Image (cartoon, rainbow, N blue to C red; front, side, top):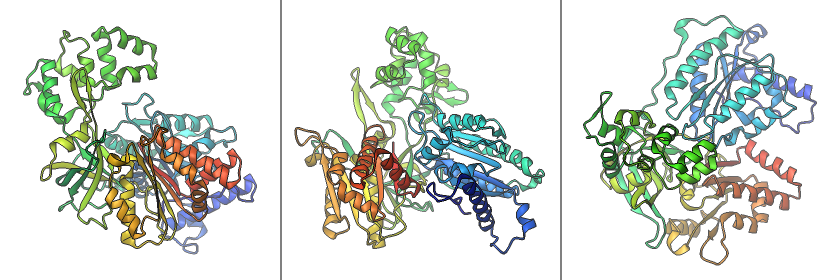
Amino acid sequence: MNTKVPYIPEDAPFSGEQKTWLGGFLAGLHSRLATGGGVAAAPAAQAADVKHLDILFGTQTGNAETVAEEAAAMAKAKGFAPRVAEMDDVSMEQLATMQNLIVVVSTYGEGEMPDNAHQFWEALSATTAPRLENLSYGVLALGDTSYDEFCQAGKLVDTRLEQLGARRLGARVDCDVDFEDAAEAWIAATIPDAGSVSAAEPAADAAPKKEKSGWGRKNPYVSTMLDNHIVSGSKSAKEIRHIAFDLGDSGMTYEAGDALGVMPVNAPDLVQAWLDRLGAGADTDINGTALGDLLTTGREIMTPSRDLIRAIEPLAKNDELSHVVSNGDKEALEHYLWGKDALDLLNLNPNLALDPAEVMSWLKPLQHRAYSISSSPKAHPGEVHLTVAAVRWMYENRPHRGVCSTFLADHVPEGAQAGIFMSANKSFRVPEDDSVPMIMVGPGTGIAPFRAFLEERRERRASGANWLFFGDQHRASDFIYEDEISAFSASGLLTRLDLAFSRDQAEKVYVQHRMVENGKDLFAQLEEGGYFYVCGDATRMARDVDDALHQIVQTHGGVSADGAVEYVNGLKRDKRYVRDVY
């Protein structure tokens, strides 16, 4: 299946009407080629009978792409010629030629579009967007109810398509983190409706049997820990670990740039603290499951859920919590919750008697954590490596810990086991062309995928330049993988290394400062076809790096601020500016 719909560049020397005609012509040609027919293979009558279903996805981690591919398989079995593309690969002129459309889009951060949907949304929400009265569409939204702006990206796209005159094939469905069953049901219900728009209802036996992907969130592979040691220095404020799992007989494969899902287990002392607070024994039955089991592997008992906050607020009789909840001030609530876990909220009123079954209904299911893989399978066959910062802090004289990071650090030593599965991230890959430059910005544990990228390029004997921006607090204690990175430099694999250790001097220096200092050379590598990658904190670092990139393009490209935006957008369209941020 071809995964890209033909794209007419915005600066192509055609009028809007010409672009629309060309977009439709190329889309039709694309579908004939994608479904196995050559240009001369399908007569005109056959081409007229082709029933198209366009499937667009916007994703940050790959989940929406996986769902889009499943939708395409269902569509093909029901007689459609599916065309799958990233949202940013489709222009408004092209959108205007479509008749049947499914959009699968995740929400990133606090209600934001994922990276590969920004430009599509900007064009769709603009006053210049075309009318879409001939379009029938459905939107499947992926999100996380832990965030206030749950599935906001999907809601926005759904509403805007309706405003432009498009007709819904069915109601939008907003999926939480355990999206698989809801997504499968929505696809099955929506695609037959899509078929009825342009063709007779397909035969009932045309529905495909869903292929099992093997190991996944619901059935993780139980893997043995091969290596688990601290790579940060003894005086570091952080505890960063290098972790290696054995893939054994799992049959799992991955590529540099993918993520590994790890199924955590809640800490025994935290589970006991919950049992004590609820005044119940571990064997207390909660709808057929022991309370101890629910608290250990079934429920998220660290991060307060929205349902728990809403339920405990009137019972806790805590003026501060009631104030921030009643005002609906998201920032004030985040400030209030900083450092607190769910048990802290239950302890606001220690005399309050709680019903264990009711409290369990307030909690979300315990979810896997996804970590960027820090190894190339070519360099470490049969293994998968991670770089994990163990999160620990104190609040009210009680230790608090990151759920999965300290599960790995404290409870999965070498020889122990944990449940894992692969999560593909097809948009975050080493360039296919081994000769082009690769620029990587990955401070702290953001180094993880770039260790994998460098190993991958070494194994492929790639000739392209490799430039790494890395930093943290102190060089003496926070230069993780220093020996390996030095060896990469000594061998010539790493052609350039710029370091930014923020607290080794009076004025703090970060990776974005190093970028600007070397802006001329960085821009030159982009002009040579270089790829620009970012991994790490999305809230501050990634935004500062993005600002620095625009500044560099404007300064050294000799363009205006608007010109810099268009240049960077071009990098994104070409998949030469991609991010793995969290």
